[in-house]
Length: 364
Ligand code: ATP
Ligand code: MG
Ligand code: FE
Image (cartoon, rainbow, N blue to C red):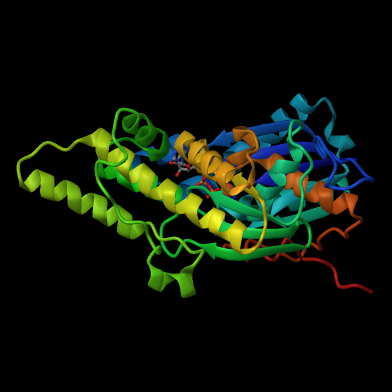
């Protein structure tokens, strides 16, 4: 069976085609399901002059990109549209207008092909990306998952990909990627800020300035043990720069970038490994576009090795938003014999991570 996945929750129009491997279990080695194509059209350049994703612009871009992206994904997969056995789509969380474009297309495609539709959770899709990695050892449960992107910073406890995902904590304000973008802007660097800060940080000293680690005080331990906050850090960077400028001193951009990056990465890795320790889980899965940050990957690997935690990092093309991960999650639902979604669902911009599939039919 073949699944076509549609992802439009943010600024990537992602179409992925996955071949379902039925029988066996997600615990087996190698790719659980076979990735046939993964086409991504991004409207990032259009958002660059605004310094962040503009919802209206993203929705319009999806509308233009969807049809060619579907055609490209089909062409690359080596199958035809008529071979598709099921359609999968992101129902949320994400930008409502952007989600609605993908949902409309998915419903139209499923109905016209006369095939079932699986409406799934974007965040759980990020975890499902892992089961497409042909080089990874089998996924074991439970695992802690850290998802970091421009829109999300979430720490999850995954007991089962298709039935049991628990939210341990999330950001209370800005997402980690958003913090990179905003601090880049303060430093006068272009959007998206992540790669720019990385470049600037390369020649800087991460210990030059001690920026705050959000929600890491002893008093935060009870209520916000696994939550994140990056807006205070952003303000601290802005204030530090203002003071330098007021004193007529030059701003050491490389040191600011390196110290800021260290503050973000330190708190992400510390909380993720704390979650592993507290839950007795020696496994950590990373996902989301901020995984492109080499310092984040390196510090995770370094500290995880000390803690005896195994780290899984899917290929970067599967970490950023894409349709293949949505198809992968649906493929796993299909392999388990789950019913498709009914057509009565829409965009849910705040869909909780515990809702893995939406519009699940009532059992008869
Ligand atoms: P969503 O939140 O729905 O996953 P998104 O489009 O905001 O969507 P991604 O495309 O996964 O997220 O990631 C983009 C974000 O990752 C941007 O905020 C960007 O600055 C950040 N990013 C990219 N490369 C790096 C890097 N090397 N270091 C830090 N952040 C990075
Ligand atoms: Mg993006
Ligand atoms: Fe995402």
